[in-house]
Image (cartoon, rainbow, N blue to C red; front, side, top):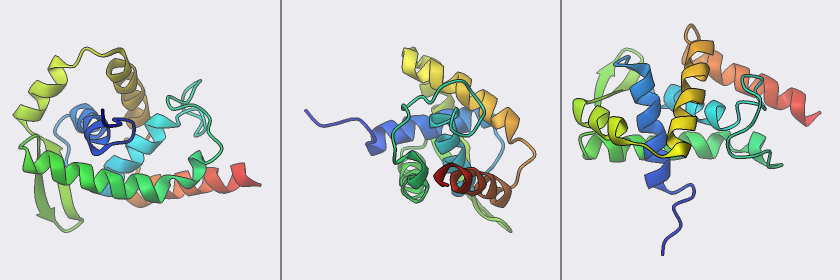
Length: 147
């Protein structure tokens, strides 16, 4: 049996939930992946009361890996028709397709529902932030926590 933890499959489902919560808004891969990272560690970033993936000592060093994994997940989602991509002045932006919405509406797992609720809170918190502002927020908290 293969390991699903942090697999492209798991990451793709989380990214698809982020796209679902964005409700048709087009965002870059870095923005979407940053929201995923913030959703996983929402307590660390002062948004929720607990971190969905626990308080591991290396969580603040995961951003680069999460951004790369998020890009891979978005490629997989686009190739399967669950997300679409467009070129803009900002670069490539992604949004969920109707097929992707159908997948999310069928999800009934406790983990997925919990993650979606956190994703809603994270997206509300960062709704006015640009890609750069979200990354600056993450990096600012990360620097403070490492001291």
